[in-house]
Length: 265
Image (tube, rainbow, N blue to C red; front, side, top):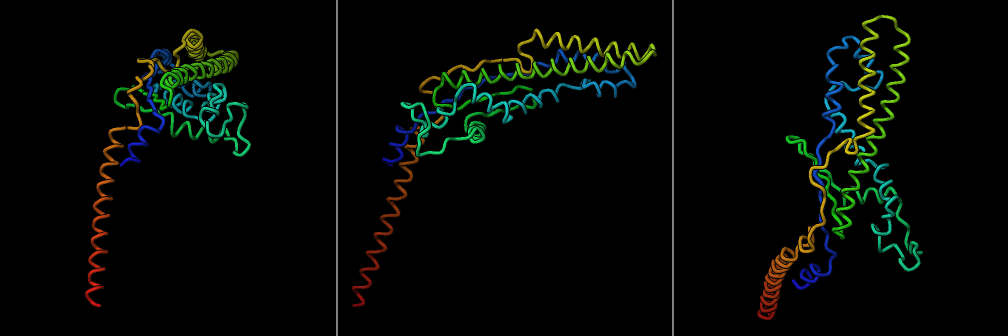
């Protein structure tokens, strides 16, 4: 029991910081959806140009995939110089170098550790709300990481949208030059108009992929995620009681065996 109680006080506390977001693509989908039924057979052309005329679920799933991707996460770890913090036992703070008796962690290992043990993403299919959680020893730092990850994700998806819009515009403008059919030119012109508006929105919208509903705030020092001192102490009491009972049973078993052995003599 003492070991469990000691562990509860010796283990480093871990705090959870959460940022609540919702997809911010409804306005953009309204632009493309408003002409989706009016371009007729040119839906295939829109697809070739990389224009999504459907719902916003594909954009949301792409953004979530980017958030959890190795490239995005490794870039965050590298830019924030988190390797020494993620692996403090392997880092010599005095020399500002990895200890010579250990193997430095690789970016791939850091990504796996960050993805499995520190960051978690919870998606509510009914409400569309998404929660990004960071479990970390420093509540202030954990909250900052959670907010910055969303900020970086929005910037990443905005840059991707700008690149896609520019590529689509280039393709559509070439197609417009090739045709002289009035109806086709009108449909292509509407697609071009949508892409120009999409590009404008990407340029002026900071919360491009996800809009923050509730920013992450540092947890109170007594609001730790783990370890639970009461739970560990209770577990120690239970385990100690079980061990004590087993000890008494084993002792009695040996005593009975010894008495029988003496009686046979």
